[in-house]
Image (cartoon, rainbow, N blue to C red):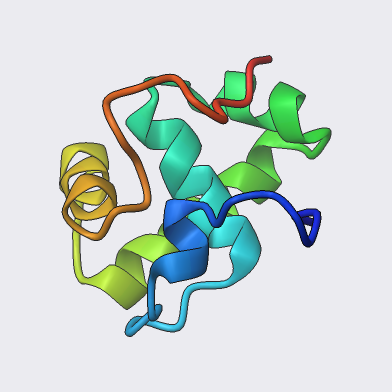
Length: 90
């Protein structure tokens, strides 16, 4: 959760036309930063199978079939940036 006095993140400014859940957005952001499923699971304190489920749901919602397609989507829609600002590390 974001503090009221902190600047908005790209996800805060995004209108979410594909109705992604907050967790799906978070996972897309981590994918865009190059984390694999195991690293995402460790970072978010969830199981690897749960990560796979979120990825599959996100892929279906955004209409992609690959990680590279999802990463491209994340950058095009402002969910990820080239800086490491706000990056969650395992």
